[in-house]
Amino acid sequence: MESDLSWEQNTLINELIQGMEVARKLKADLKTPYSVDTREMLVQRILSSYEKALQILNASASMSRTTSPTTVTSLPESTISLDGNPTGDGIYGAIKSDKEIKHDSKKRKTMTKWMDQIRVSSENGLEGSHEDGYNWRKYGQKDILGAKYPRSYYRCTFRNTQGCWATKQVQRSDEDPTIFDITYRGKHTCSQGSNASLLPKSPEEQEKPRSHNSNIHHAKQPQESLTMLRNNLTVKTDNLGNEEIPYSFTFPSTSFGCMTQENQSLLPLAVDNDPFLSSLFQTHLLSSTIPESNYFPSPSFQMNEFDWVYNMPHSESDITEIISTNTSVTNSPIPEFNFPLDPVEINPNFPFNSPGFFS
DNA sequence: TAGATTTGACCATC
DNA sequence: GATGGTCAAATCTA
Image (cartoon, rainbow, N blue to C red; front, side, top):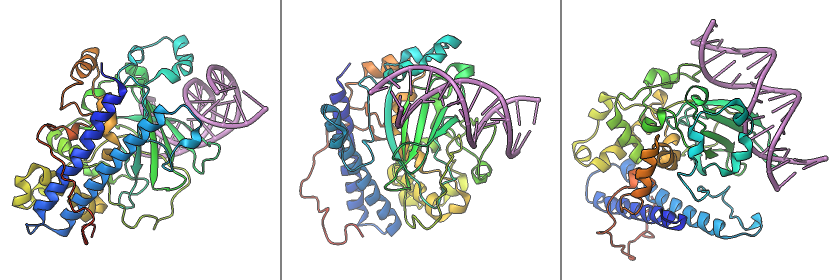
């Protein structure tokens, strides 16, 4: 197994390459009659990639330091916090006795842990989804010292039935209430582990202000969901702060919106022919033009990259496979960033600072 | 009535 | 002892 640094380096490289790829798309896009919105989304993706790359560097730097937490940067926290063994929590896959359960907190520190951030747009609303394809059940909320907002605790719905010990904590950022820091712990060992993120949600369900029961959804359109997942790394945050933000928050427990045939048919042909632009366009189309339908719980995609890599394997063989293929160039922990590294060449003269580039 | 959320209490860790 | 994480009874909702 590779070292953590290598794993992060791969992630970092992929992020940078992702930025490059999007930049190239945008460059090509400048010669086409594509909409400003599409270009805007490309720019957003570029920014996202570089932001993630910087955060990865940040995380690496933080982990390499053993000094006080005052060295932490101004970000709420590194978006990646690994314990060094992405697959090293196999003990949590087994169903435990009551006695073992009671002592789980002792093992807390040994569980795989990673963090992500989600920015919630007003389009989706705070009561909208922050779903990651898994079914979470809230089991606690606590005021945290020094934090303006309470922290919510979620665990996998299938904890009892399938012995899935994945948990997550959701903490709204003090600095930016539109950002939620999410800490995942443990790997999903439930049946969702393999198809999470591919779980669509009907528009009807999406329109519900909050779901209470029956949050189990089955993948009906995995391809669409995959496409969405691949491209939903960022969320437009225009008009943020225009709404009163409730102090307490609760994310509904499940899953992704689904792309409808009608929506897909709206894609311009040129965009449709480009898988990348196509999915990108779909993302933007849904998130910006029909907010009422709330088809897209976009934040969930933004958070899901690490969730995916850790949680997707749901058996020991899957884990082994990930470990054994970790040296592959297509082993990005962010599945949507999987593409060969070889042909990439970075052009330092790319005009990022050109006037109007970030229009 | 089943399943989810709320919330006070308990426990482990630092 | 302070704090964070979890439990579990009470409550809510479809």
